[in-house]
Image (cartoon, rainbow, N blue to C red; front, side, top):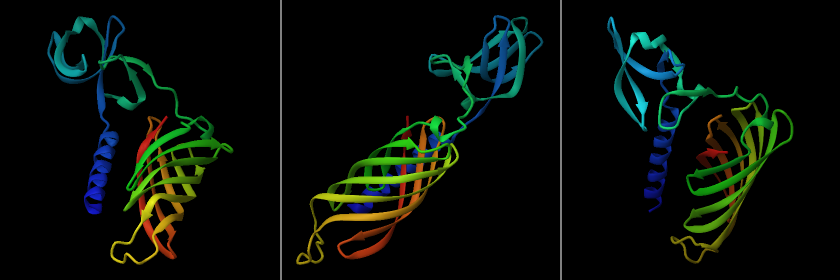
Length: 229
């Protein structure tokens, strides 16, 4: 069962990364009416320009007379730099410049770990330093609650993130291979990790965890994927 859950989480992780990591350069058409259209130009004749643009939430082939076009450029638009009119690829505005301080990034985060679901709130302690307080649910043979404290050190997207975490299990985490062994009711860990927090909300955390539980100490690699807002 554990292996099935782990496989499902890993598959979800890579699908999520693929969806957010994919980006595309668009061509640009500016109409004489002032509309700036991010599109894929297919061909240009003596009288018309043929292209694909987003309309009503789907991509559609269309065309425009050259007399209605004031300007066109290929590979001119990077989609993550612009805000578009709802359901279209007509440019509404350029997105604001990236933040220059940790004080300006999103402070709230929700994220899924290999074995947990968490929420965290970051409090800036300077332009390059922040403190993150988090908590959530954890499951490994038994279900428990997790609390986490970590420090963010670095730029506005890439951070060094050391921290500590504690888990308390609602029901005993019993060793089924040795039922006479004392059940585990709590665990603690020290982590030294990396965090990526993108300007559009993508959150990625990776770290080795040194875990202390039931008198044992072991290392567990942790991955978390989520959204900041």
